[in-house]
Image 1 (spheres, each protein chain N blue to C red):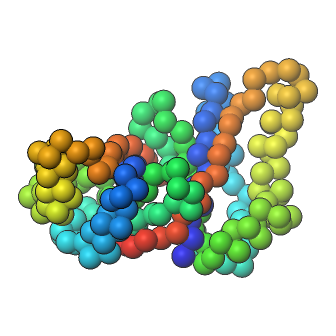
Image 2: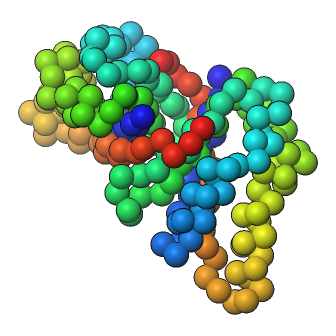
Image 3: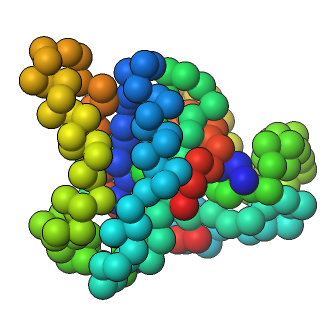
Length: 106
Length: 106
């Protein structure tokens, strides 16, 4: 089993919108072969990033998602927000970084 | 639902032992009321920490575990390794940091 975590740091002015996007997410990722589940984790401490944890049957399944139309569909609103910030010369509303893992044990 | 992640950075000389401890873990935590599941994640990139992700019914259940005999029992071998390193003046074999989360959505 394979796990990918997207560590996302939001500008404080963007947090409400960020949460709204996930609370009514597109569920495009759910259609991918090899996708098992995801969980969005909100840190108790403000200084910590949000985590989007996705579980996959294999690393190939995860890499397939990154190149899929579902990846674009699932991120459409967030990508639009990022683009609008860039075009207006504003600070990007968030930064993110994927880290990948194998499951050692449970 | 409540999630705690222990971010653990190991000295490279300790990684084999660290993995061994988890592969035949004590399962003491499994007996705690409110414990749901745990997962130990091994990073694909060497520079990243290991993650011990535990899921709980509530933050109180997690805090109860921290003060329980099961916490001591579950960490007995690791604590002994840490103590031995300290007594011999060696570098600690690992560092760890708990970060806690609520589940925003899945």
